[in-house]
Length: 89
Image 1: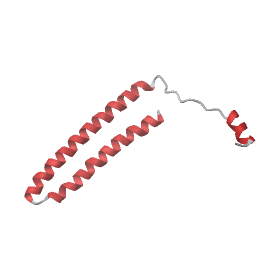
Image 2: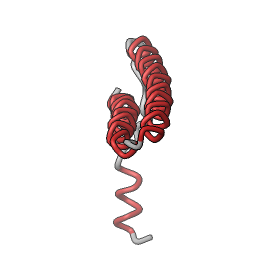
Image 3: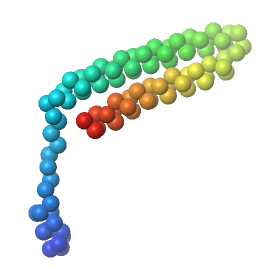
Image 4: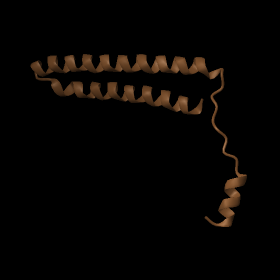
């Protein structure tokens, strides 16, 4: 480590992040919303799976794959949004 790095390291502050007390309620709501969204996503995958089985018996199974993609995309958006908001709070 050169002298400039040593001086810069001693001068630059390194604050520890502190969550404001008011954010506790918001984080609780986010946790509940994320959990409920994931449960609904799992139920959606199960429902689409049942629909695929029924459509496969009729010979139309490929049409349900698009629905499965939409359900999985919804799950990704729900969990991603909750994670992004938690990062900024």
